[in-house]
Image 1 (cartoon, rainbow, N blue to C red):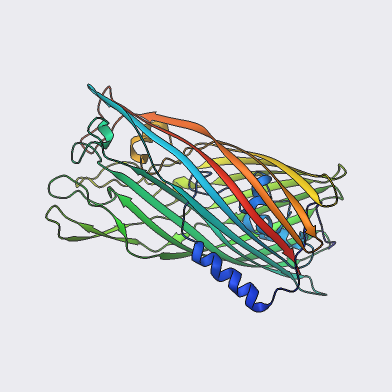
Image 2: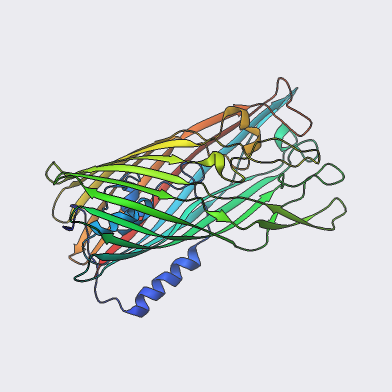
Length: 435
């Protein structure tokens, strides 16, 4: 198979020692564990090059992170061995408005700003049809922090309201892959996915209420682990067209355990089952215009069959909420890249996903308001030399809202309303190096 390179393919220093590679990995692991938003709980892109392309890469392997993130078979299109390190910085805006009877108010969250690191390495074995890759990515999460209120009905102190609402979750995946060039045009790849995650929530409504009808906080006890697998195909249809397809299985997680307290302040053991959904992707890449690369992806994210996210938002007799009742969604991503000079490249991308949260589920998702639909991105790269390039990108997650009835365990309140309003901005920075 011929090696496919796109105009923005960049290279890095071959002087990096084994200790350098290991040190970079350790730095990344030290930064891991923060949270992000995108297509529901799933982050749509990894690193500034991939983000600048709107997350479209199932058939367009521009750099290591983008190639590894959605379709492992596309690493056959990476020229040489490549390392890419990226860091995203996320700024979110979340507010909750609610009305019950004469009470009505709006509260702004203060989730803060946090980093989302990514690491991708591709090694092409010399004189071989095999390529190896390793992706270490923050692939999903959420975070918000809403203070209790005496005037915002949803946030009134328990048991009349939810009280202070604080939530955070981060999912990190380690994904080694092996890719085989079966023919000059077709590559196939597969590998396991190791997932680790930490989740915390206040109040913890996924367990029964205390004896006084209040809910315990659910404090994260440790990182929890799970696993799955992925596979992909990459096909060179012609000199100008590439096609790709991939599947990521459900990330089956061990049962999450939390430390809580009952109405007397005595310890309670709390548990929840939360899995990441299966994702199926298809894509096309076009190189027929000089100095241009166009890429488009179509994705299916199966939230409705993922434990925790897809379970019905109903209460049992103890006041336990069974799930978030998310719907499975389709997502679309489009990206374009232009080589301005031999050293400079610019990118623009757009992605859209159906909203996994219906209006009727607004109350149940006050702590998980992942209702983004439209994302616009832009970015660029500059080659410092033939072995090193720097990249940056920006994404704006347009404001979106969901409004439904206030629905405590005693039943939905007629004439009430609760509205989540969310928007976000991402800044991404990174380096790409080739040996």
